[in-house]
Image: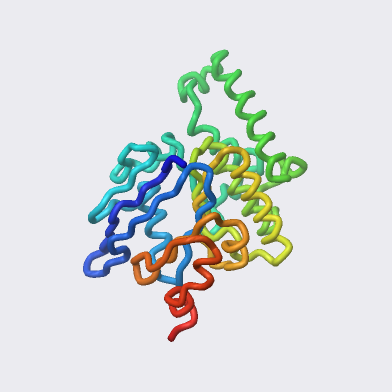
Length: 252
């Protein structure tokens, strides 16, 4: 399989603190790959580097053969990387469908001028965005709640809405940051089904997850971070049987 994302000896320091030290791994097209590790292992820092929020101190990040570390977040999003966050980040004063439409605007062409003067291209694009947003809400089983205020959704459905908004950017790679956090077992199982469905639609998934049942069930491969370095990589079964991984979570 072709590599879609390559993390090449990435190091990130904040002053005297090293958050990541020579982290290297790759994600292949069509994979669901999980990134796990104890709190403070550097998982979210790595996501922030991939999406352009932080710059690397050393090393490089490659996406579909192009080096992307140092690019602005909106440029990386246009290249085809989308993400969700540990804490749900929604536009709470907007409806469910308006939140998804905001994601679609990464790909708009008519621009502010066209929208302001209601040019024909802008009107047609607006209708297309509405249709696409409704299709995505149907994909995550939120179509019937499209016109509700996003803040009125239960927490689990807010997670789904954030995923739908990320999908609206038409990503090739979707980074999910602890999507099962706060979900009960039945909600976690439904989330697993949705992530598998996303992969089936042709989108590669990189998943940061503390819920080991979720990570083990749906991952093709797992990378384990500890104190900013990757200590293991392999299939779920290999990771479960790795003594260094067990030690990282349970102690010696």
